[in-house]
Image (cartoon, rainbow, N blue to C red; front, side, top):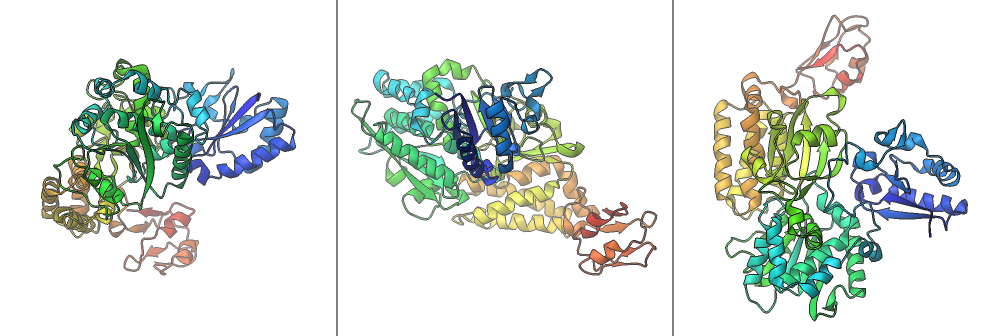
Length: 595
């Protein structure tokens, strides 16, 4: 029996900050101090506060150490483990009070969260099936196989109101019902773990921190629709997730929780991994299935829908990682428990990857109906450097921008659609006054252009033309007529593209036009970028009253565009200026400004 457990985040974010080296150093120091039999080191999944990684939590007491470095480990072992004295300089400041260390659940970041899909992330060792079982893992599967009929399982999911967390928001139970309704000699259950939105890492974190929950949920789904084989389509860029999934599959097979005659009920179900090459279009269900079949990932026309004719032409059920992560808890606690959270049409919770201009970047799980203001100002800790909130991008390249006027909107599927955005898979990127909305629209559209599979003309050609129009605007070469043409093209692409990727590609353009049209007009009419981002429209000026003639700016200018004598005001030759900003960065007297 250990007297202390040290949980070290082993998710991708903390691993990239060196948490794997911290684990090794920690084990070495513990052994060196004769504490090997007293202190257990557990590598977990993501704790959520990615901005503070590497993260280490010591139980009992839940002391939350953040931004830990290898050189800090000897002090932690010596002071905390040997002498019982907390190393306060490394403790997450939000947990430190005059009375002592307060619970993480009382901090602004965690107190409004309700972790269901993420309930085990940061708590258990994801590579140990016994720890998953110890937190009621596979109990839901056992109940389903011994106490439920397939129809009862589907009815429970229907009654829960769970909607697909991959972005579309289609009722999960209805999808399961459709898949069960088609007879076939073989059916499949698939998991979409091909998370491709820029800034999104929700599904990755679930797979890294709690892989067994996906296996359990897929097996339950297999029983419900009459399938015997499952596939998890996960991108190869997620090596930690892939490794832990394979470990989990091997362990589940060894325990008889995958394979033949599960729980001695005669039910057979197995799961295999398929690695994606990173094509964004393979997040679309039919393209994903085409890729699993070994073909180039391109979407197929619908109907027929996958529930009728999906993988290998057989009835197929496809949900994403987060959707599956809710299933075991719904079975264990009941549909009414799940419907008690959220809004009338959007039940339960939603995981968001919070990023951009925000203090607390990381992973959050909030009840549906939580306002954007609560997410940004309370959970996220607000905008750094005293800047003003300008917009939040939800749904990635398929979503839209939510302006400050809608900060108090409750977040759910229908509310976001009503203001020109969408939930998407859960990326939430915060922007401040220094962001140019035209540039943001161009960034997401260029991503879509790169990721288009090219199968249909509206997406292949249309998005390219949109990108060219945006490029023209950011360079100050467009007219007001170009803005109207661009808007018209957006609607044409939405109505005629083959799959969801093309149909939603214009959303970032349309939402920024809707709320920030004045910025587009400023680029076109005034030839100015109000945020000072678009290089072609910038100019750097030297204030002669502030310039001391120190010559530093002229010496560091890479194109000799700054002229002037020592102790005299300098001047920038605009025809030579590369607009690199080096002079602005180096000026000690605030004499150079960007306009």
